[in-house]
Image (tube, rainbow, N blue to C red; front, side):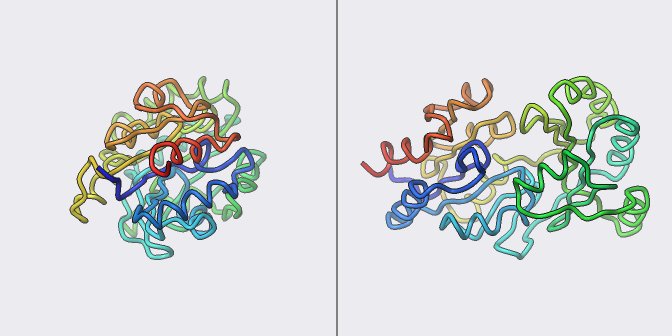
Amino acid sequence: MAIKYLFTDMDGTLLDERHQVSDRTRRVIARLKEKGVEVVLCSARPPAAMVDIARDAGASSRMICCAGAVICDGEDILESVHVPIQVARRVREAVRDTAVSLNLYLDFHWYVQEPDEWSLSEAAIVGFLPERANLEELLDEWEQQGVCANKLLLISSDEEIQAIFPAVEKAVDGQAQVTLSKANYLEILPNDVDKGSAARDFCILRGIRREETAAAGDQDVDVSLLKGAGISIAMENGSELAKAAAQHIAPPNNQDGLAQVLEELFLS
């Protein structure tokens, strides 16, 4: 059965080591579109870090962002799910006076207390800068408005993230998800949302069966996406959990691995 949708992660999967779309990948996406396949980007990134790449890649304007907490069509937010405000407050306390960079995302906005080496490094990857904000005042404003962040991102060294993990889990207390998107990127996301559930809902609304979908990813946060697709592809450079969840293993992203496998599976 021919696939109608390809749901793909970005960093470590679709993008090369420079976090860019290669010419070969761009050509493969164009050929898939000719065959009637819609390529949907699914990332832990916020929408503002995805729109330009979707255009450059020739992918769909419809995107699954913040690991499923936000769904948008270009610059229009279609769905936005929030972490509980008290979770954000407790995580803020858990990382206070540590070397961990706390980043809060809401729709097209990215907030930090002050830019640091970690947030600036992330800004170089995603192509835009965070906004400075007094996070205590911001959380107060959000509580009054009845909203909160779509996700919290903690960035530091691998060792620091591993050390802070238990305190963050305690702070979250089961009221949100705690997951790694990279060894030094710890994500706090709303319960009951993930890339896989967002992709499933996306297909249900369009009458697309699981067997008509493919998915690609490289990290733990991609496991639900891989398990929910008819055909699943993990990257050789990915986590062990991601590779265990996939039917196919692609060469590394810095070798156009995803493009290679897509050519073999759907374009040969």
